Image (tube, rainbow, N blue to C red; front, side):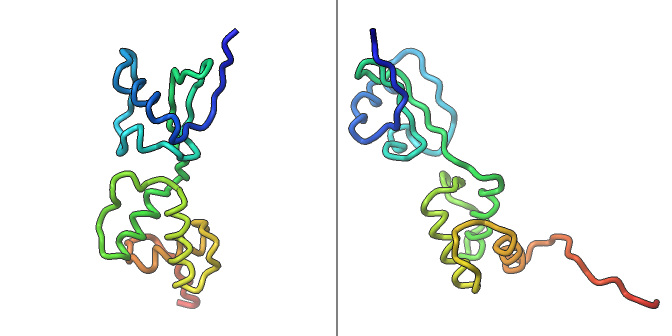
Length: 139
C-alpha cells in the first residue's frame, strides 16, 4: 500500500518539484506572476506525496476580496500607479504594509483592511467615490 499525503511543499522538495514541472507530460499551470518553484515555503503551496514521491503540486494563495484594490491604493500613496506583479495577495508583506499605513494614520495597527482603513485610503488617494453629505434643512 502506498502512503498518500497532501502536505505543505517546502525547500526540501525543490528537486522533485523541478522534475515534476519540467519533465512531466501532463502539467496544468495558470498564467500567474511566479514560477512554481518560487512558491516553495509558502503556507499555501501544497504537494501530493505518494510514497515519498511528489506527484502533484498546487499553489492556492489567500486573496482577500479587494486586496488588489488595497495594494493599489497603498502603491498610489507611495507615488506608484500600479502594483507590482505578484503582489495582489494578502501575505505577511501586505500585513506589514497595512500596519505601517495604519500607524501613520493614527489607526489601530492590526494589519486588517477594515472600514476605517478603507475610508482613510479613499480619503488620501482622492478617489472619485460617492460620499455621504448632510441634507439641507428648510430650504
